[in-house]
Image (cartoon, one colour):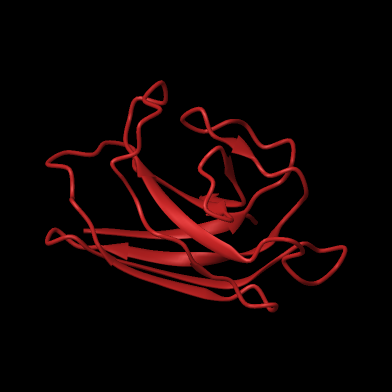
Amino acid sequence: MLTARLVGSLPNDPAIHGVLAGGVPWEGGARATLNGRGRFELRVRGLVIPDTGDPGPVMTVSASLFCAPDTNTTPAFTTGSVPLSRHGNARIRAHVTVPARCLAPVLLVHPNGGTARYIAASGFTT
């Protein structure tokens, strides 16, 4: 079972598993759960660009799970895209193939169906 909190990315955040941070700062985040039977749920809340208060040109989001090591650039899974509201809210529910073993799991939220960038990642801020 995996439960994770995700936070918006900043342009100077590092690449994670070869995926680059989005080109503008993002605030807000998400909560995710994944059980051993492959039920994945991600609730995105208030994921917006601070300067505009909305998600700008981002109309949809998808999510990927990566496992260690960081040199692994192939996700364990990537969900389909779902709409992102003008308030930065979205919900992904999917049945996914769960790896038998996943060390140091990282969840990334991708904009507009692309997987080369992330706009939120598992982590926290203080």
